[in-house]
Image 1 (cartoon, rainbow, N blue to C red):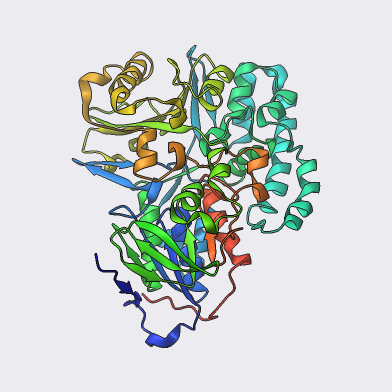
Image 2 (image 1 turned 60 degrees about the vertical axis):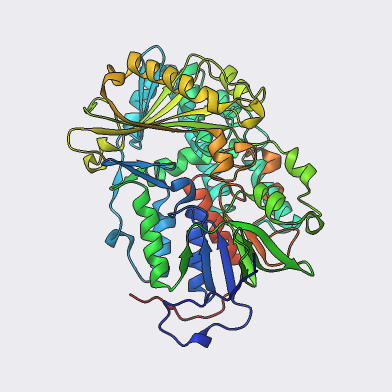
Length: 519
């Protein structure tokens, strides 16, 4: 194949072609939330930005499937910290409300235990005290103490540290006093257990790290900040599905003159004299750039897109020996009847908690039991399914591919096991009403989303794999290379990946003060 050279001049700008100074070309690999947010921030700073997306549509893990009148968000469905999204619209001189209809959830989640007990997790302080008292009135004082700890973690961990790029060891040293105040060496389960005695309440207050790929028994207590983040800003869903947020960000980029190229898989990041020069696509095409921002899995980026001689820090050995997050088994399905008693967000917790998580994170065993997150977006937005129907997905945390599970052989039996459990608990007669059905497995995370080991969230957010110890937003190995997304600092979840893009503000300078936004 003849090598092609593409200077990718952007056709959408109304200014003259030479508006961009030398050294201003940026390629963003991946169009997930982190990549789109980074592209917006860099375009507003005056950079000439092109986004490359492997799939046929934007979103990455937030891809949207449309099937026979059903709309399925592939991944993120829980929207917190909406101010981080609003900030992107404001940078472009716009208001998010003009494009996005966010709805506050009440409750945030319904937590259902295997014995049938229900905890309605909400943002209302009085309702939460009532729910705690239902399970264990004597734990109310401890619950209040836990809230104080969570608020401290939010202030010190999220407000102060989430957008610090942690590019030097000095950045880490400056954060040490805050880490001590948050007792960062504790796990979040240990933090909860110091204040709350009831076993089921301990689960309710500690499960949140699972939403970002962490084991509550091993991730740092700093992640108690999620509890405070939710109480402060609420849990929201988007009318039309999370994909509407992605389309809204794409619209902002179009107004900034940023091109998104789909079906464009990067096979190599080109480097000369330890400096990024651009990328090579799978089809052999070479695109030149002065900077590359990878929204792809950081371990995948270093291992597969950068030649070993350019990686003194993130060597194959270090990548292979890292501790990775769990993966996910996701079953998407539609029914020809509604289930009005099922809320938008439901957690179905099994009998085992620590034992199941040990099987998933440490033993890498696909257990016979499971805990589930059931998503029914039609509870809020009936337009996501045909009239009189429901759209669902159910998510089961499972080990990554080190389990050795043959998912091609196991997918249907595992799906059927989940179906039978749902039929016995909250979706009676489910099998008779299925009209749409497909699954995503850890193998898909590896093959479709290019995640090392098929881990859904990259490196596990352990204390020694967080902040300075996580792949840096500014590459330790290559000049002009940057990282955003779940697998860099500060971590997974929509607030985390948006914060990773914001962290670039401290390491990539402003080029042009004026805003090139056009309608």
